[in-house]
Image: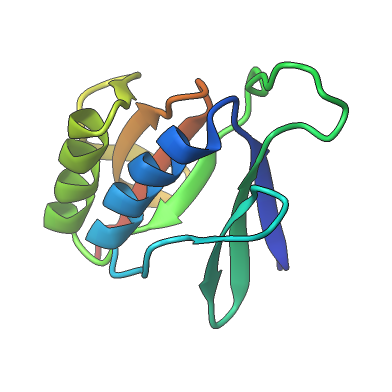
Length: 126
């Protein structure tokens, strides 16, 4: 559905270190910096990117926004969460665990990144 997701980061280097750690736990390669100071994570079906806002203003998180990353297992989601905490992220919402809703059981782990963006690791429980 999505070709790419780009989020603002006030300190792209610090955000790259954070995302290299958490996305590495999900099996992704470290981000690639371009000559404009942006960082890109490439997959077979999309791109996740970090950038300072092009208008020169401070980056801000989207209130009510969450970016979810697919996890292969609850253990992988836990490792993602731990790597995030160890690399400058902040736990938010409930502790990692199973939640039941209208779309079934999901194992969820939530963090705030160094620029306060809300992110999540999600595993669909069979």
